[in-house]
Length: 457
Picture 1 (cartoon, rainbow, N blue to C red):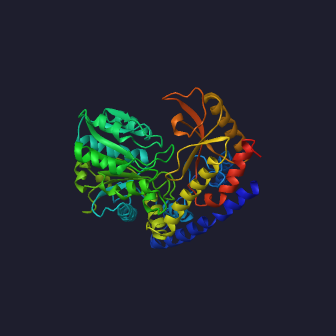
Picture 2 (cartoon, rainbow, N blue to C red; picture 1 turned 120 degrees about the horizontal axis):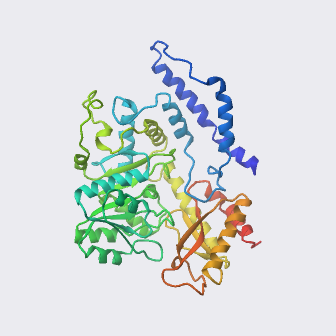
Picture 3 (tube, one colour; picture 1 turned 45 degrees about the vertical axis):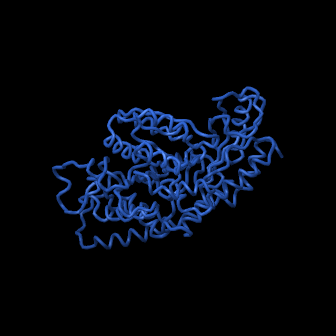
């Protein structure tokens, strides 16, 4: 197994060569400057410190490898790592043009392409340090538009919406889901009838099971009740490009341009290093809520400074450079190479789900809408089933396959046979995120190791 891991590392080595070439070209841009460098402190011990750091970093799961099929961790593209490393020579700050002139413009161009992916030519948007802060900005603007009004999301939405609402001092309520983890629009309408809701969060790709809320039905309710609609597509946003979604998910993504705001995380499916999130507003006039004065940062250019339309101040310009470079190499186009990689993850999930459904020892979860698979282990009781899931998880890791565990409603699973299951019961199950394109080729190996860990061979 160690040999396989090392081979996979070697395949990613071009990033270092690309970074070296980029750094040389960047150095030439500043060649006219007199040498003003001081010897960095502590360089005599730098190699030893880096060697120790490398040893410490070895105490990790192999997130980069296809046999890591647990949480949503996807290796950055080599060109993204190279561009990020190159940009760190300058270490730009994309708050104001003073600190990130080129990288700020690259951010504007990269965000324009993301907005175009969602069908927006007119919008307001920028990068953030991640999806949590992007969602915070979207809900902050929503709170400005409807002060004191309630934020509503499904019970399978990311927990960050509840926490963010608390930070913003906005009331929050969750509504139920169907047996596939999608928002129950009847339950949503019951809540809307109270007249207390200002914002509805629709999740296009829940982080637990990859469920896609029925956006078309939620939009119909917006016509009736007039709330603000925020789409949290932090995980699933790039599936807008996928051509192999089922009809219901495809219909939801086709209507995403009708949202008032959208969040997507390039550091998930966008092949970027952490942290890189993106928030978009359909109405550019939302910039008025950000308006503020700075005594020293916004005077070097009449152009818009990104700090004037974001809550964060200092932000890594290197993230923008990495994203811009990646999108230059792999444009966000339907039927393009990037889109084919997204489609492979979904194809892998469907294949694994089919194998699970054909194995009587397991209880298949909802059919994947994106690239996340969940399944239970049969047992007489919920506790017995949960215990067996933990055991398989541990044995799989010992055998080199890394899965995840999830605690989900028992009603998500087909005919599990639990004698103590009641409405509202939950169970611990196995979960796999097949977001690497390589996973499609590795599904047979993953399945064989799952069966071995379950003692089915």
